[in-house]
Image (cartoon, rainbow, N blue to C red; front, side, top):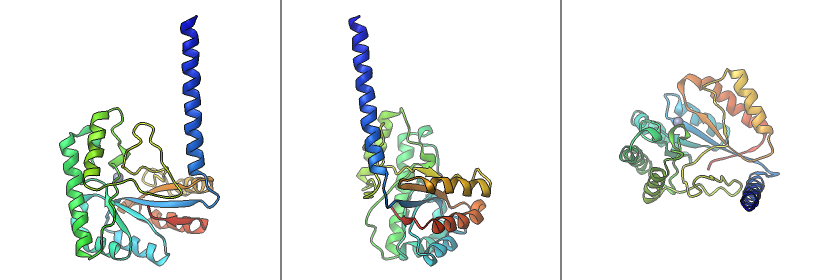
Length: 242
Ligand SMILES: [Zn+2]
């Protein structure tokens, strides 16, 4: 009997905690003046510079998460982005699943790309004011607690921080101190037809909350990339970088 009461108490406490966390999440993400944080992953493709030009022409801000192994062929294009006020950020060197490689390999993935990014900022003579990181595939190594903590400590030791967006707070229940930048909406244009992609985007834009939107700089989806950007423009929602 006594044990049953204890179980009920524990259940009620857990329920209250979940409700409080949900309320905090809703309060921090809902906004009358909603914003979109546009993040573009897997840069740079051969079409990267054209995409940057399109964003410049339409006065759209964005944050680029780059894969180190692809960067050496497009240093001038990346320098062009940085010189025009866009941030290029770290998305690993070869885009592996972090949960499937060792800690030392992860550190190497992060370090090599960090160095390339630093060099691009230096060559462009632009100060690198912050460092953001996004795990390939959003693989946050769930349930590999020790490894995840060590990866985060390593990122922090290199100067990586969580973006300080004023209108958006992402609460990671598993690891609140995580600095890896996640998203609220992955457009998944690589998986869907153009029609389905744009329909999904419309639904996302109709939600009454701030969004960290994820699109990709893949050669295969270049055509739909411009249509996504046009739809963002049509929405009249303020588009920001992180
Ligand atoms: Zn990626």
